Image (cartoon, rainbow, N blue to C red; front, side, top):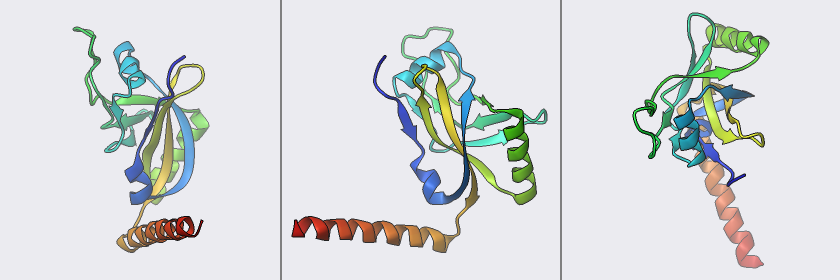
Length: 152
């Protein structure tokens, strides 16, 4: 069809400890899917929230306006509904309310059938010392790779 769309939320893995992952469908309009296919979307500052009916929405996801859309264009920061099974939704809602966890989007992609999907994660916020440890591990891996490269 066309190039592979894979929009990542790199901050999420640094700020949160990932406990559980889900792949959810997303309800979009025509101009929104066209912008995503042009890689004009960002999920860096976004999070997920339940409404009073028990439906899951992604908040603060930025999908730029479609360049060739006229008055049918969408709002860039609109709330967008996520599609999951009822069983998964109830489990997520129970975990968020009881344990105080967060739901964050990790990746926005288009599957082989052409549908937009979002990988979301049930996550727990990291403490400052956990973030420092993550940075230290990343630096050590980079230094090790440099040393290995110099000996080859």
